[in-house]
Amino acid sequence: MKIFTFIVQKVKTALMDLLPIIVVITFFQLVVIRQPLPELGEVIFGALLVVAGLVLFVQGLEMGLFPIGEAMAYALARKGSLLWLLIFAFALGFSTTIAEPALIAVAAEAADIAGKGGLIDSDKKTLTTYALGLRISVAVSVGLAILVGVIRILKGWPIHFLIIGGYVVVMLMTIIAPEEIIGIAYDAGGVTTSTITVPLVAALGVGLASSIQGRSPLLDGFGLIAFASLLPMIFVMGYGLLIFN
Amino acid sequence: MEFLMDFGKILVATGRDVLPIILLIGGFQLLVLRQPIPHLKRVLVGSVYVVIGLALFLAGLEKALFPLGKIMAAQLSDPVFIYGTTDQPVLADWSAYGWVYLFAAMIGFATTIAEPSLIAVAYKASEVSMGTISQWGLRITVAIGVAVGISLGTFRIVTGTPLYLYILVGYVMVILLTLVSPKNIIALAYDSGGVTTSTVTVPLVAALGLGLASTVPGRNPALDGFGLIAFASLFPIISVLGYARLAVWMTHRKTRTAEKTYAV
Image 1 (cartoon, one colour):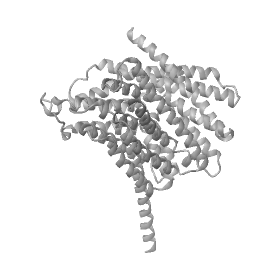
Image 2 (cartoon, chains in turn yellow, purple):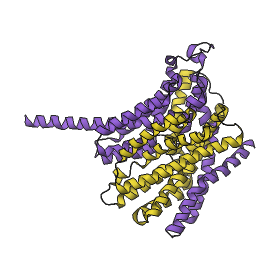
Image 3 (tube, helix red, strand yellow):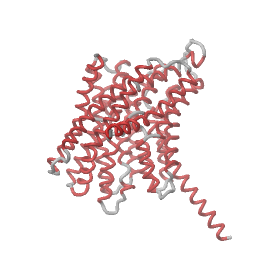
Image 4 (tube, chains in turn yellow, green):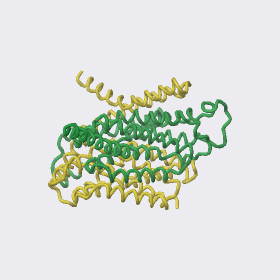
């Protein structure tokens, strides 16, 4: 009985995430478009899978990886050696990004579009390699971003210098990057930071900021995510330069 | 049966995707911190949940979120729906796509206002600013930012204007606002851009853009289809910085008026 109410609770939370989308789409279907939604059964089945998947995914993270990851981020931030801290920061950014569901989905879609548009060969192997290449570029850049972000917190650099510097590099890269990669590169920044990355990275930032004297956890703890959404843009454009030229 | 086969394949792939996190956390716990993993059984069961959940999510995404975004884009940009005839004009008239812009704005607003990580950030923000920035004020500001961003993004796809021009103007606005914003809100505003785009919103919005680029005449999905998520992460930064500036200005004015009344 207890398990049952627990499951209901979890499903309710996941449904709440989908509810706004359902409301807007239903409104448009009934009031504006006034046509039946094609393949409605298939879409509902898929939506149920999405809800079930998110429930299990988040539950699994909360059961094991989040508590240990957070405790570890705190422990390393407080007393670990600088080298291990930096290795951990990079590895955390890299591994959480590789497992990010939204990035997996968007990278596969990008490969599909590039294949159809004749930018790359459209056989399965080339598409998979291209999608994996995109994800690895993003993951490496998020790893580096977290690493630089940790150094920033240690040194107390103001965040806006890093961000404005990043903007300048993004614009310079845009000039030389092939046209076909720019859209997906700009999107890569927003895609990277969602379900897994944010809680673990936030724990690292707050843990670090609260263990150094004169740093405010609320002020210096923030800003890691911002940098982690900026660097992927630069790296994916670099990946495009390698692939399309 | 076919579905189960596909699902099996996805399951293997997601197992590989989650492996780096498990190796990282296991490796650091045992080799660097040299401590046994607490509640080992619970952690292992949790990891199995993560793999199965991720696989289910990706399978559902292929069947629901991606098709949904594309169907909506196709229906809203269908010539019969827009012009009332089946004749496709050679060049798209941007003003005929009003419903597309409205749909994009509503999806952006609705998904952002309910976003759990934004609720958490809004709570912290009101704490940092000691109440100058209210939780609801911030959530609505970010949601408006996302709504305007995605809507403008669909306008860009319909007109086919270059993405970097919009982003460049956005960057200049962020930099200018940063110069006049209260220092303690800057990092938070930058982060609010990243947290708004959740796991459910991203695929739907990406599919909407790709669907639009393939149905609007004269557009190429490979060149014009992406960019909506970039808009959705840039515009909240601008709206939050603007809101913070406004909030400070309002408080200043209130105290000044209060001082004046006191002096009289």
